[in-house]
Length: 110
View 1 (cartoon, rainbow, N blue to C red):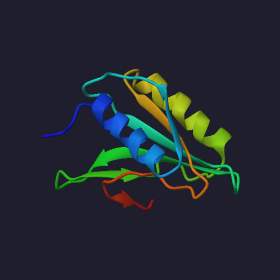
View 2 (tube, rainbow, N blue to C red; view 1 turned 180 degrees about the horizontal axis):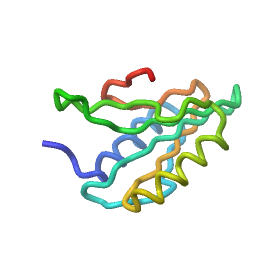
View 3 (cartoon, rainbow, N blue to C red; view 1 turned 180 degrees about the vertical axis):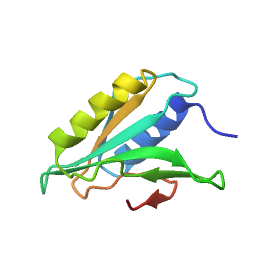
View 4 (tube, one colour; view 1 turned 60 degrees about the horizontal axis):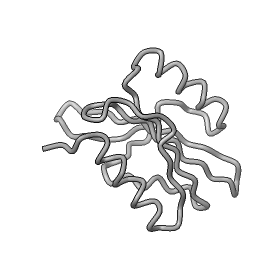
């Protein structure tokens, strides 16, 4: 059984905060079933990464990096395009000195 999106997002932000990072919901989508984009900002080295949830052929939930860039403006453009396609999308930003994403599901390299 999957958690509703609002509860899942709250847990992600809480994990980040417990580890000393800062997390914020930039945009709320559908509270029950909205998709989520997680943008991770590393102010130490000036990079950013974006993660998008996906489902593998075997039904397992995973995360992937949908945009190849590590520059925040590029990722913001990707987010703007995604919002035009899916108005129920959640956007979460995590700021962490080590660049950690705090996702518990598998993260696949793209």
